[in-house]
Length: 88
Image (cartoon, rainbow, N blue to C red):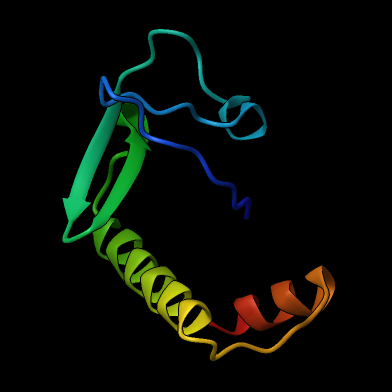
């Protein structure tokens, strides 16, 4: 899993970080799903019935960010972080 940050431009555009777009082609069609304050981006050819899993992942991610913002977090290294994330 990759996590990165980007910004929304005044024209409503975002840049997908280079590392995250290596499996995408210029002109490829994407689906954007809005779930509250969350946006989920999927390739149209990957869109399937597992959308419930995507929404659940987005919900858990948002909850984790809220905990970090409120100071409820534990400092750890990346190896331990990914082990903990695998438990989700």
